[in-house]
Amino acid sequence: MGLHRVGCRRGTNSWILVLTALISVATQLPVWAETAPPRSVPIRILVLKTEDEVRAALADLGRGIPFERLVRQLSIGPERERGGYLGRVDPAGLSAAAKAALAKTPPGRISPIFPAENGFAVIQVLTSREEQELEEKDHRGAEAQELLQRGTSLGQAGDLEAAEDLLRLATELKPDLVDAHYNLAIIYRRQQKLDAAIATMTRVILLRPEDYDAHMRLGAWQFERGQYAESCAMYEKAAILRMDSREAWLRLAQSYDAAGRARAAVGAFRRAMDLQDFNDPALDRALLRVAIQAQDGPTAVLAARKLQALQSGHESFLALGEALLLNGDVDASIQEYQKAVALSPNSAAAQAGLGTAYDKAGQVDAAVEHSLRAMQLEPGNPAYYRQLASLYERQGRLDLAIVAQRDGVTAALVASRILAAQMSDELAALYDRAGMSHEAAQERLRAQSLRTR
Image (cartoon, one colour):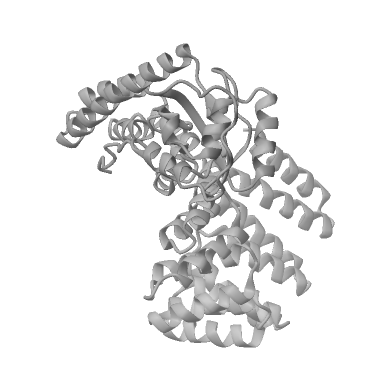
């Protein structure tokens, strides 16, 4: 992640554009009778499209919002990034409308609304103290720009500690210097200071809410930290900022997936796929997995068929069989699982899948046969014992169901205590149905012990 923002002083000459606009106002108003204002007046300006918008902004000003902030938030003029500050302006060079408004406005006050080339405007005449503070701020800004340049160069050269010092000083001198915060965040990340990087890039987004790159980087860092909800929010904004960004949609899908939002992940994965002009088996597999989690049968089938077209082997038949079963196409699912078993008869997953499909079709005997085969091929998998016990119970063979479930608990003890406790409870229920109350009580005690251990 290289440093690439060295900071350009946007708006440095924007006052020239504003003055040109004011001079060329189409509607010329008569000069007011008041005494002409002194030459070279320090002013700020706010320009909006309609007079009503200006009046609404002035109402906000009356509620205590600073004029400078209103300009940064609302103005449509090029002076926006400087908070409307145009420096010292000679009234003689202004349009009649602007000159008349300025003539009625003493230092520290806001002018009447007047027409400008692109809409309507008001001017704030600064006091001497305000002008001095702004000039000092501009001086600090120039120093901060120099520090940004030097810090960026040092970071690119690999001197991270020196770069950090200069960039931090730049942000202290000019807290709204976005590029200094941005590069400082990258320096922190390269130093493995992830929390500091996250906090600093968050500041970048507060200062520049439409920054796509900042949202993408912050989303990645939050994902790395395990802050999946926050990562989702960053990638959502990035995807809105660039609707055609495959990377943003893909990262968003991965974040949704990590956050357990399978349905949202399905939509984001599909959007990412729509934006690519090539087939990506990894993306198809990811879409299939989240579609199954979301119980989205049609999407699962779509992804599985695409995978089958891209790769051969029994796994592709397995995937399509599972997707078809989820979608309620039981007969078609059986056919796909049969192909998987034919290609790989020693695949426990293929045998178990075919058993499940037969079970859904009401063919319990065939389901038992293939589930038993899956258990024999992979005796350490508790799920196969569980499946087999359920099938035996439906056949009315409680003795075999108990044996299968008991062996399943033993297998589960190796994999997961929580799963073993769940299966112990299920075994206790089987004992109850078989009239074996003592064994049922013993099994419940074991389940409780597993949970509290």
